[in-house]
Image (cartoon, rainbow, N blue to C red; front, side):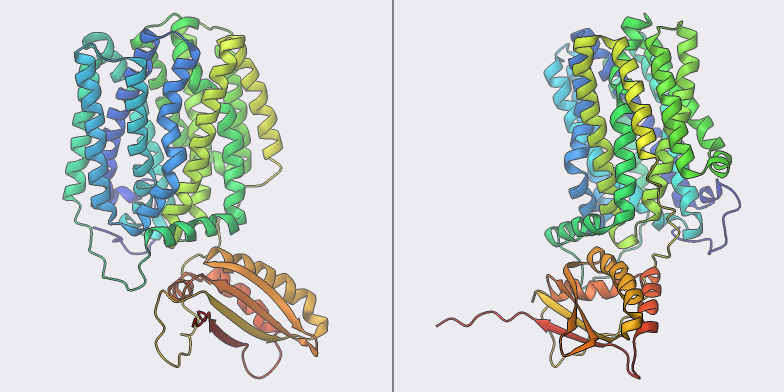
Length: 534
């Protein structure tokens, strides 16, 4: 069942669960993520047995996030051009193989820091490829009116898994050892594979304008480079996660060396984070109404900094559990706010690639932060490093707060209002580059307003595929203005026709209102001619 249920507004945050496919995949991913958290607990704790060095512990954390930083953008391209269901099934098989290898090595006492880091890195590669694809399928499963609720439910599901998985993993690790814990993770991947096999995704018709990998990669980068709202979300994410990563990088050492706990206690701490995140997710709509997006992110940074300071003081174990409930609530508020903003500003055609850029920044900040804070802890110690990280996080949050998060209320659905180009004969799709010229007549008194509007439109041209843009005037007739932009191929220009949104159409209407003359602006298309040799 995909996109069923009509366009009626959602009556509650749980409305997407009325759709069978979304509900089945949501429950399967909760189980799958529970297994992943169990695996992560085992790996994080085992490295403290193999080496007590803060740098080694941070290295395992970084090994899981570095692949997402390196591969998220290619993963986003693949999620936009491949069959997402088949791609996800293949990736779940790869991840199950990684956990099965960890299980065998652990059972035979063959795990080392090197093999643990290497296999964690391989698992991170799988996670890098899975992340954008999972997020990109959500619009296929629910009506648009329920999309934000579905995104919030996905965040809630992750944190349900976070509340169960670490505690269960810690208990299994303490009672039965790492091999059984890794084996439970393998079973969780099989559940996810079964759900994906059950999902009968409607086949998509062949499209002559389907993108190839390299072209789609370039288009995604052009969009990310030209989208100012995306730049703001990426900036705010980098500032938050680079400094808040200190608590995640050092938490295993806090549990063992500062709080004197064992593997089971470490799992309970992570479970408290997940439980706090569930509470934060349930309170999020009310908190958003009170504080807005920017207030929520500033508050999340403040609470996270307070948690870091409290852990640095070495509280009793029971108090640490309560403190990490607050960390979980703050973490889900920040994640959901930033992820929701990213989803809201991205059109469907580039959603996977745009989310991949966001994940690249998120995981890059987490990776750099983990390595950096691990190195600082080698010099200063764990507790002073947490205090320094808290101070830096508060300072960064105050600086970033001056740049508001975009509201994401523009209508990004395709407008389909561009007329088909006039052709003397069919043009091969791979021919290019293409120059498009649009001729306007603008009264000198209206020129400032026209130029303001057309420079806003220039951002849209670049986002949707143009690699060059300009506006010129006729020296013999200053009222005659010519807009030009360059596109790499004829196929890419035809894709532009599909990508223009209703929000972009509104800007064009502003410009047309300032255009003089009985006829609409003249549009011409020019194709590059290859030089004749010989």
